[in-house]
Length: 265
Image (cartoon, rainbow, N blue to C red; front, top):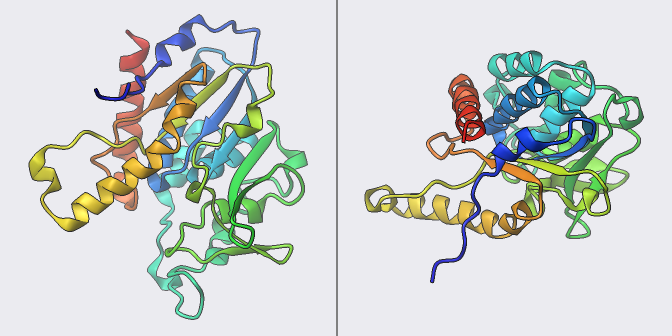
């Protein structure tokens, strides 16, 4: 027996009562996070209002920019023009290849200084490395929690907040629905790291098997949440690495095409 697999339920957006706002959950996924922009565009097109956003990693970057007042088009241009992995910022003395604090200069003028100043309430998922637990930020300074949420272990060094060390929220909670457990509003999800099915020849090396297995492991801790949302879109972006700025435009186009395809069903 094969376990039931989640199927994209995006077509249900057409049935939403437009007078009722939605809660939006945005997963992490490095450059694949640009796929969230396509969904934001569709929600605007459908006149669906967003009550609040809960986000992780690159999703927190998109969410904080959108909640700060940037348009989907402006966010897309940021992803297309901003090199996240800048090799001149490689560090040896810190617990990460890239220094997370250098990235502050890329986004500090794109987001509001504090959570309280955002146009849409936002919750950011991070991992508290000291306490071995997910920690959600929703008040006070915005920049450091966003940097922490995006700090992929091994690539970016952890971010210190109030004496504690924080890394990518995706370590434990890459699809943070928990902040909306008691909300009366429907939850719409956007998950950009859904693993694609593989042929045998695509699993013919150790690295390929390990990479695929890690995505399946992450999915195993997140998939049950999809069934608890009103609708969640899981984009077929398995062909993209998510770590190359040259992929951004193609990722966005693939996401936009997939949304249109599912909305037509």
